[in-house]
Image (spheres, one colour):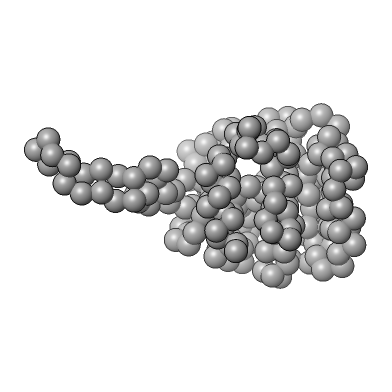
Length: 222
């Protein structure tokens, strides 16, 4: 699980690292680990930088709680410097035991999705989860210069990258950069070769970038 990134988009409402956003009696990080456990994962690798690890250890009890878990077993891949999403996954791959593995961003919530569907399709490369985003604003319908109707935050018609993947260690070692963003380099290259699969997801998906996203996520898990 990719845990890098600060909650910059949430400031000044939130001044803590995004993985530690409060979700009742758990943090966002703990929620995602729990979701993976419910879906049968017995081992979770957290890709994070040393600053976040220090924050976990010194300022919260999250480190102690997740390290005490037996199911799933939580292991950490710690970056001394920022490696980007591609570099973070490549480094974490050194700790992955299976050839095919699941990867996700800590701030992309897709609790209705089934990771097994992605894993079953990833024997030769990368499979990504596709979601239709919800418009952040209400839609106004106009006819002849007059407002005809309103639709509150409709779901858009196109798909976006939902931040959940299944992939192989072999492909990561060959194509992923040591430092850099794999979404902007590896994925477009695979798409051009028709080597990138996508699975459509029609459940609730939230990408926590703003405070309103955070509020929507809170309502989802309460």
